[in-house]
Image (cartoon, rainbow, N blue to C red; front, side, top):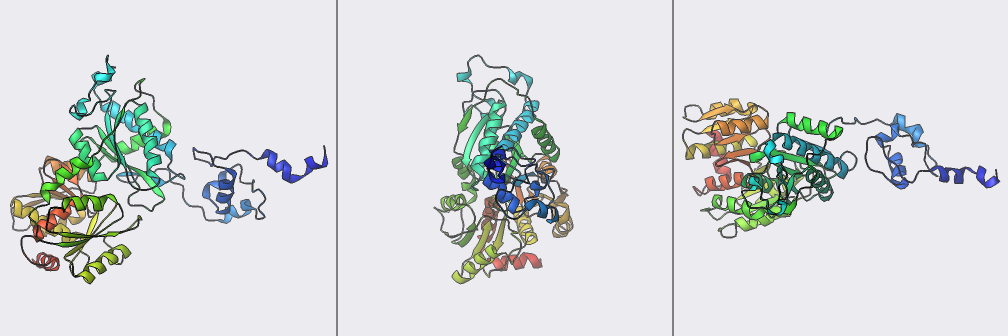
Length: 460
């Protein structure tokens, strides 16, 4: 053996792998990222067989790793209603593909067996699910997909679409959109499911899925568990053919469904804060023919509590309302479902005050209205409706069960514990802009300022 062969540097260089894969992950990383994770004491490095490969670094990371607090590694990416994980560390394109395949397998189980027969002339098929409006290349389930404005979302949606198509699901792709637009398209196209790639409710490094079933109903938690198990175990293909992928613009259908709600308004000046570029565009279109003025405030994408009066974004909107002596302020979260109001005096309107106002609006439209409310709101709703023909129905804490009760009982509203609102007219819909339309219609019945209207219903 030569002297050069005995030197530790060249020997380590020859034994170094070309790439690394962290325990529990499906993608490889280069040596530089491996060293960076060691230096940052990444939790998975504790169980890595290459944790001794520190390159030319002086510090021996493996000696410090056991002393660094180890964060809990989540066994499940499920929340009560959706899927969330840190981009790349917990959720990447490959994992998104597996989830897409697992979702497809569940949808195939719900599909009539007759629909699995391969067509003789594939080029002439039109999916029954879509009322003949969109040509597809398969008789499998149809899934509407879309994604939000986070940088990781195009990568994740690519994996999900690959998984769905491989399993024979026809994909209607709305591109970059918003959850209310996707759910509107699911209902109008009678699709089997909707899949929206988003990290809403989490910090910018997170991503995941929001899923809905036929009619845009929330997917039960038990079904989400089944999809997660199938994604981890793998599923077999239901057909030999990849299904079609059809881009479609869902914005026109959505705007046409909202337009009738925005009419006969008094001349408001509204300050709107939003972390998306799409929301100002939608609002400008809805208010184009109205005697109202909009001031948009761009907000950062982050996790926020819309009902915390100390939140910096809410304080910015409130200050803008006060400085300009405007009528109303609001912040619409990136999911398009959560929103918060600020009065003309810059005070945050609480969820209970909004719930009370919406109940009063419903009773004005129908004296015997039924209102589904979360368990945490039942006592308040019972007091509010005392002596009236209207009634409150306990929706429980499961959103899926509550929305089903909303439909089965033909109720007007469902008020959830987290401030979201479902309206039931033709179909159940959860949309911040529907709440905005109802509030503006109520305020337009008089010249009273927003703060006075809230104070009045609070004292009744």
